[in-house]
Length: 382
Ligand SMILES: *Cc1c(COP(=O)(O)O)cnc(C)c1O
Image (cartoon, rainbow, N blue to C red; front, side, top):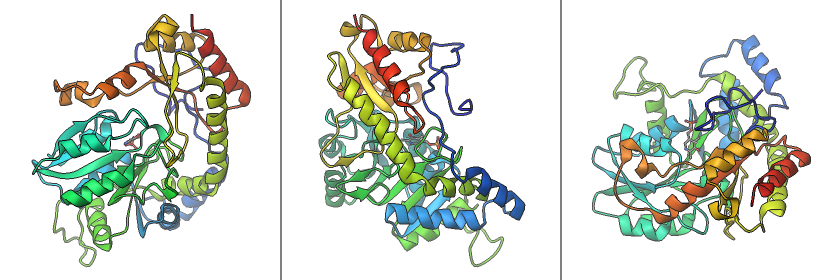
């Protein structure tokens, strides 16, 4: 059932089907019924009642004036940068450890990504490192809420205000998380989201952009829909894109939103259970939770001390797979990847990336499955 979502672990050429997959989409509500309704009504393209309903409800969830549905989380980032008027040569600060789409979006608009290290105490962008990276060409900051934990937004917004920068928060991994009680998506100039199959709510592929500005709303809609003038059909004042989401996908998202509290409750239970079993084990580190953070548990994440396990993170992942448990290594620091390669060192990102492992996390995981994963992992220590 999770075939479409699961990705092969690197190094495992033909991974055995894992009895406990890394992720499973939770489609137990009105998803099928609403998709059927959309088909019956013939609203299958990028307009229709579910599309309108989703944008309205998602803006309410995020506490923003506007939410725009887009085709995926990468186009959400791309559209955010276009809407903000990023120009070639502009410098944009982003974390050295996060999903690759963030850096790629910066390159799509011919801007220059400036990588900075993450903070040991929450694994998101380090505000002091951001302050040090600002130059006369800096235009903005992309804060990424890594693995369900919100970034430290107040100091980032303060730095941005002092330097006249915008801030985009990429909330793809932290849908419905909160920072000092305020929902992600409302914490910066703009928020971006992904609804890929392994995210907390999903439409298979999908994304959204959230913000308060009416000007951004007009501009983002213009560029989302091929650049067509809203007041003059088939007049195109700019080169736009097709970044639209369909009413079919919006139908799935409307059903997902109906069960959002239930999905979150179940994921929080899985997270708490992991935490009680793995939180105090020598050799196993967990993502620290800052006092201002309300998590949206995405993938439960640990760091593994190779000494304690007598093997590398990748070897531990292989041994878990041999026990029918699928895991995922952390992202590599982006500045170590060929398109972004640079000599500079990012010690915190490098250490966490080298030892980090994501454990199976989904709303349907049973207590017995969490126990099996935790006990098997602990059993691999020497
Ligand atoms: C998943 C993800 C994206 C990309 O979303 P897609 O929908 O796969 O394009 C972007 N940023 C972050 C932080 C993500 O986790």
